[in-house]
Length: 94
Image (cartoon, rainbow, N blue to C red):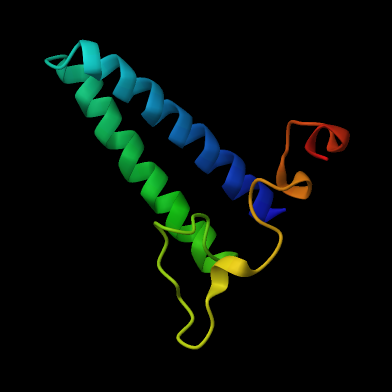
């Protein structure tokens, strides 16, 4: 259950960061939005670190490989596969 909770929280934070980044592209001087963006990025990094400590890499090109003798990115299932897609019905993933 911890894996699903961490992944859902990370997905939510990454969505908020992307949404704020788009807003900041057109409102680059909005100090409150910049502060919110920075706070969300820090929170997402914290959750991403917890996820990777418990589960393994969440991204193949952005995550630290915590194992010295094995590339962990190829460990299944990957976060986008059906069993970890907490909103979509399984048949939509096939």
